[in-house]
Image (tube, rainbow, N blue to C red; front, side):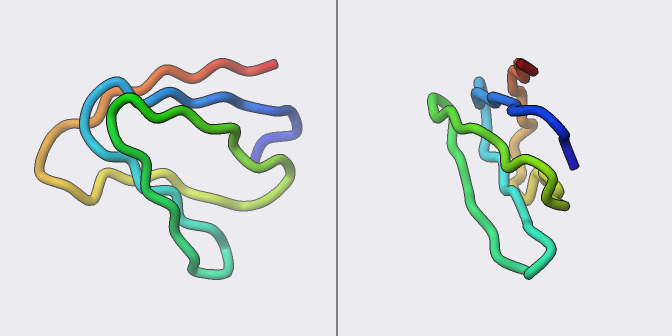
Length: 58
């Protein structure tokens, strides 16, 4: 959970973000997104390739 906006840019692999309600969003290399604020979530590598990503907090 983050109290401030957080930007994530996936550099390699695929990153899956799972929310407390069980829903998921998947982001591949080259995709960027803003993470939810004040909401429980978990980022996971469900693939076979290592994931690298850049996180910027505002």
